[in-house]
Length: 373
Image (tube, rainbow, N blue to C red; front, side):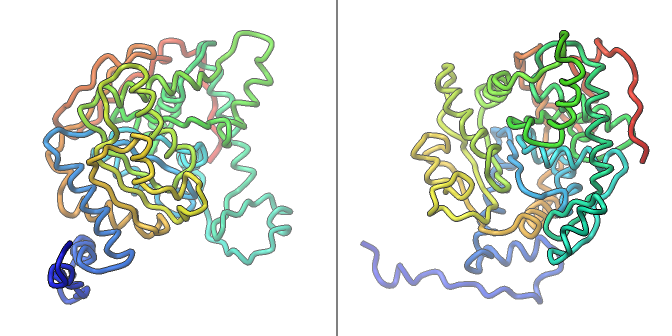
């Protein structure tokens, strides 16, 4: 048992704004504070350790929530561009709205108190205090269906299909999430892709082609491919923005890797940004300690949670990392695929994009007209 003096050995450090000149300075001050400021500081420390580990862990980012509507598109893009994330697992909505912006369309300021029936009359959709143009959504949905016609009729993982969407966006000169992932060879997975506007576009495609050989998604191939990333990495670090399917999916690959015979023992680093409560039993609010009971997080993992809305916490954490220069000189992970097989995981120097070719490039049939911006 500790003594009273030992228990009262570490005083709270009051945040001193006179010592704050940068965002990184503020995050450093938060490390000695309390409540969610300290938790955010703990997440920053986990991220620092993850990036500075000489074993060069593969960093897997889970995305859910209204992140593009909330203004985080370029923050997420910068995580890819600066090599501080190596793989993404997302909801379909996040990457669809990135692609929607790649087509030249925007999100607009609104208000949660707006007349929703009036908005419906104008074909305008509301995401809390953000508005989107439903007419443009439907144009992009249809465009996704049309570009899918260029692909060979076979089963694809979402990694392959999203790399193709990233290539389309990149060729349009976009520098958003999918385009930057394509440029640097960062794999993206959306295990519930059907549950998104991308799924709506693919349903239009399916209706036209259902009585002949056609493109289709192979969801178990996603499991197999992401499991290889875990199994063939020396270590893995995970970042969960929100929860839902991406969080559970990234956790589950640890179990699948064990079943398939890889020598793994959980993700070695983990932090999460969430607003969900753990006491409801739902996955989105579940603690990282709970995940240790399943073996999904390593028993000795460096881990932290901040209960915060992502548009507040994520820019601070990413800005802190970039202002500290933890991305400088960092080697990138390059995944070399042959079909559904991850042949090698290499570390490469430099910051230039690799402009990877997707497996479907050789089977393009014809150009498809993009929606008018």
